[in-house]
Amino acid sequence: MSTDRRNPYRPFDRSLIRDFLGKREISSAELLPAGKSNTNYKLTLSDGEAYVLRLYSRGNAELETYVMSLVRDLVPVPLEIDRGESWSVFTYLEGDTLKSVPEHSGVAAQALARISSVVFESPGWINADGSVSAFSFGGVSGFITQTLQSANARAWLRQEAVEAIHEILKRETRRLDELDAESRLVHGDFNPTNILIHQGVVSGVLDWEFCHSGTPHMDIGNLLRNTDPEFHDQIKLGLETGGMSLPGDWKERAELVDLGSHLEFLTSDRSESFKRRCVARIHRFIQRFKGGFTV
Image 1 (tube, one colour):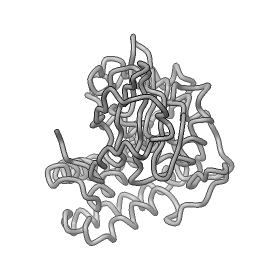
Image 2 (tube, one colour; image 1 turned 180 degrees about the horizontal axis):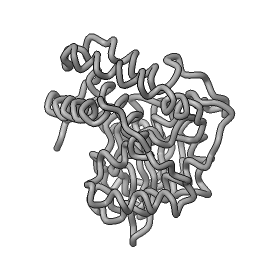
Image 3 (cartoon, one colour; image 1 turned 180 degrees about the vertical axis):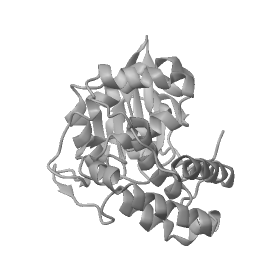
C-alpha cells in the first residue's frame, strides 16, 4: 500500500463511535486507501448497514457538511450520520474511483461544472457559517509567488526556473486577474480518486477539505493532470454539457492555476519520487508558457 500521503493513516478506534454503534457490532473495518490527508474506514455493521468513518487530520467536519449541503441537489455526496471530536460517520456510497474507470471522465466533468454553478460574493476560504474569508495570499499569482519563496520549494527548483515563473506571471497578468475575480465553489481536490462512478454515472464526490470560493479552473487543472490526454476531449464536452461556458484558452488557464498545486506539493511531506514528477511538470509548464500564448 502506498504511503505517499500528507498525513499518516490514523488507527481505527472502536471506542470513538461507541454511542453511534449502540448494540450493533462491527463485522468489518476496511481501510479505504484513497485520499492523502484524512483517514477513512468502511464499516460494515452486524445489521448489514455500511458506513464510512472519517478521521480528520486536517479540515473539519462542520465545514465539509455545510459545503456538501450546498451541492447535494447537484452531485451525489455522502450524508453525515454522526460526528464527534475529529471524526464523522457518513453513508457509504457504492462505486469505483474514476482513476480505475477513466473512460467516464466526461460525466465527472459534468459534475465539476454543476459544482461550479454555486457562486459566492467573493473569493476566499469558505467558513462553516457560510461566510467567506479572503485569502491571505491574494489570488493565483499571489499563491504562486508566496510558495516560490519557500525554502522547500526552492530546494527543488533551479534559480533560472524561479525567475522564468516570475516572468510568466508578469506576462499573464490579465488572465490571472480574470481568474482571481471568480468566486465559484471549488472542490479543491477534484482528483479521480475522489470521484466515484457506478453504472456509468457519478455516484459520489468525496473529500471536501480543500473546498473554497475561487476559479473552477483549479478543479479542471486537477482533473486534466490526473487523466490520460486521450480522455481530455471527453472532459471538454462534459464541462460544456454540464453548463460551463469555456473560453478558448481554458486548458492554458487550468495549467496556470495548477502550477500553484505543483509548487505547493514541493513544500509538503509527499514522497521524493512524487516531488520529482512535480518538478518535471513545472519545467514542462515553463517551456510551454515562456514564449506566451494567444487564443
